[in-house]
Every structure is written in C-alpha cells, then in structure tokens.
Image (cartoon, rainbow, N blue to C red; front, top):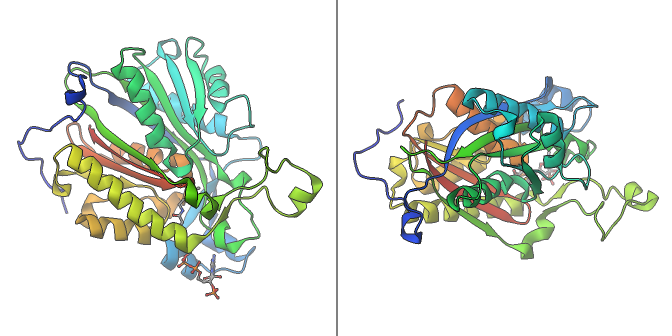
Length: 347
Ligand code: ACO
C-alpha cells in the first residue's frame, strides 16, 4: 500500500517563533554500516535455552550483526560516516563538528568521536560523544541542530554507533537475543529550500535508571576481580517494565512533536521508531492511529542496535526509496536513563 499523500497545507516550523527565521537545519545525507557476521536465532538456540519461535514471536528479531573481534564502535561509525559523506559530496575538511552517540565507546576516554575524527582525517572538526542510550541519535541531532541554527557551524556529522555485543551477557537469554552491532550517520547542514528538522522533543526520567543499566565500569563500581565475577560489566534490563515505559514515552513524545508542528499523524509518510521490539512498535503505531504501512521496520535483520537503530533505519528507508524529498518523517526513540525523544523532519 502507498503511504498517505502530503496535503498542500503549509508545514509549520515551530522554530520560527523562536527567531530562527531564515536558517534551517536539514539532514543532507545519511549512511550506515553493519558488520558482516550474522548471528541467527538458530545460532543462539545452540548456546542458550531459547528458540527461534520464542524470539520471533516475542520480539520480531530473526538475526543480528556482530562486529569482528578487532572491529570497534569508532570503526563502524567512521564507515557509516564515509558513506554519508560520499553521498553528500562532503570532504573531511568540511566537517566542523563530529558528535557520536554511543553507550559502547571504544574506551571510557578519549571520546569515540575523536577516534572517528582521526580515521576520517577531519582535523578541522571539534569532536565529542553523548550518552543517551537508545535515544542518543535524536539527542545528538538536536544538539547538532542548535549549532547550525545559531550559525556556529555549517557542516556537522552526527553518528549513532554501537558494539553492544561487547556488553551483552551471552549466557543471559533474557537480554542476549535482543541486541546487535552497527552504525548510522547523518550530515547536518542548512539548506535554503526545506524546513529540515522541524522539531525534536527529548525527555528523561532518572528515577527509572535501574530498569536498564550496566553497573560496572564507572566510578561507583570500577573493574575488580569481584565485579567481573559478579557479572557487573554486562547490560541488565527489567524487560516488562522497560516495555511499558517505552510504549508510553514514545507515544507522548510523538504527540508533543506533532502538536508543535500542528500536524496530524496521517500527514507523516514514514514513521521510524526505535527498533527494539516488534510488539512495542505495533503498540505505539496503533495508539498513535498510524497505519502499519506508515511504519518502517528493519529489526528482524539487526535487532536492537541502541543509538545506531533509527540511524540505520533512516538510511535504509532513504536508500530503498521509502523516503522521498519533501516527505514528512517522524523518528521515535526510547532507551536507558530512562530517556526518550521524537523528531519531525521535512526530508
Ligand atoms: N527464550 C526463551 N524464553 C525466554 C527468553 C528467551 N530468549 N527470554 C525470556 N524468556 C522467558 C522468561 O524467562 C519468562 O519465563 P517464565 O514465565 O517461566 O518466567 C518468559 O519467557 C516471559 O518473559 P518476559 O520477560 O515476561 O517476556 P516479555 O514478553 O516481557 O518479553 C522482552 C521480554 C522481549 C525483553 C520484552 O520485555 C522487551 O522487549 N522489553 C523492552 C526492551 C526495550 O525496549 N529496550 C529498549 C531500550 S534498550 C537500550 O536502551 C540499550
């Protein structure tokens, strides 16, 4: 089925009332990279007490990608970035700023963004990481947008990249079936003939930080023989509670972002939700009143890639022609923190 046609109603840019007239922030190109190695549900059946039937019916995931042993978040991020730069005709010297969203940096410091800068040879660019778990890509887009709108920078590279396989407990069937590795990248620039990123809503609730975390490795629990033995350096999640919060937060963020733009959900050609669980995606779509054909899903191939999730999906949607210039796109994210967000983009 074809997505709903755009009506001729003028799209309201909520930024305008804040004095941002005359300067827009557009995503001028996107790229993504996923590692070669595929881990199927059948492969997991051999290592943990699970089944393809359980994983597929409870999550929608059929396979995920795993980075090679010497392949790190910075490498995947740089590869996704090079693809976005090639498509957009952007040279490394043009980049003013690199923002990497990740919960699996190559190391606690220096920032993975600095390692990406080195790999790209983008030596004019400032570089830093942000950490908002699965919500990181929208957080990074919104930060990048502020620099474009304020005329501070002209060309910004935003990356969501993760090597989640390095923090997944491969003996815990509750979590190990859910996650995968990969990266997505976007170039932000001001473009005269489009509204670009119309609005981004972000939220957080630190009261629920314990639903999804990795207790070890920070200053609260530095690495010791005991912390390793207690499996403190792996991701932990209370799946059911996370599920409920994910649905409610993404709906609230979506409604707020649409309200700001005075748009009805029927006007959105492509909704790209965080690719964590097919049942979460369906619940959010239904409660927003969206038609299934408006919603882009690729989690069957990659599982949950956290900050890379909507970035990879956005690139695939553009590459496959699912998003066309002028389309309205709604990104929805949710993750540890808890954090959440929504962004409306005129492509
Ligand atoms: N294979 C087989 N059985 C399993 C598996 C598995 N891989 N995992 C759990 N089970 C079992 C459980 O042990 C439980 O058995 P029991 O009833 O005997 O105790 C049963 O299946 C049901 O488990 P639940 O946890 O209740 O299953 P649920 O339907 O809630 O699905 C899931 C679990 C998939 C984790 C779901 O809760 C979910 O997707 N949660 C949200 C995840 C998410 O959105 N994360 C986003 C953020 S991620 C980030 O920020 C990094």
